[in-house]
Length: 115
Image (cartoon, rainbow, N blue to C red; front, side, top):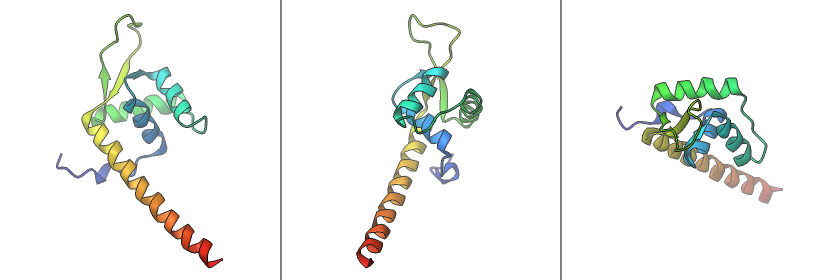
């Protein structure tokens, strides 16, 4: 891969939330669903189909990897972690979103002062 991350952007809402959840640490599927709901303050929920379809795609793309099983955990659970590429892409999309918000605030500020 060259250093161009733009082909991955913009991230879909589901992928953005999955990567954000994994940025906080390794999680299994149900833990990921809970973390997405917690981080979004209940505004966004992932069903199992959406989660596992996206995880499979993210693993093929190299953004997410299967993590080692933490000590004492159920061996039937699969844990996932953010890869270094996944972290770079997440950071690039967060920067993109920050720019969108900055421009929106500037536009709203102009609109408000014109009223």
